[in-house]
Image (cartoon, rainbow, N blue to C red; front, side, top):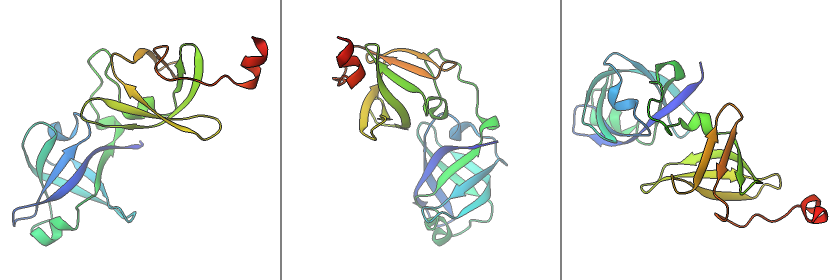
Length: 178
């Protein structure tokens, strides 16, 4: 199974090895104690740790990992991404709820014109933002909000956004046809 990022370690908390982590979705706060998570540090290192304790709700959670007993050891995890196998993720239950991994690679269309493919989904306070790259390598940041999205068809790997969201330049073929 492919690993899916479920959180990021923000900082050490207290003196007994706890860390404060920011959840990137609904999975981290609900993982059962004893679950093993992959902990990847910014330098590319990867190790597996077992969740021993967890508290807090919302997007920030205090986590105690087996074997991490000091503040110094917890500080070394700062900035680490936490990931699990995709099989541990709960199914999306709300209509219009999607996992980032489902959206990456989808083609985007604005008013019937191709815009590019989703390279990443950026979590922002107001709404998520699609990072879209076109065939020329240009990057566009598009809102992934109820106001902007007309439809999402994961089977077709297509996201339709409302007309007029941004100006889409006509390709040579499109301008010759008019």
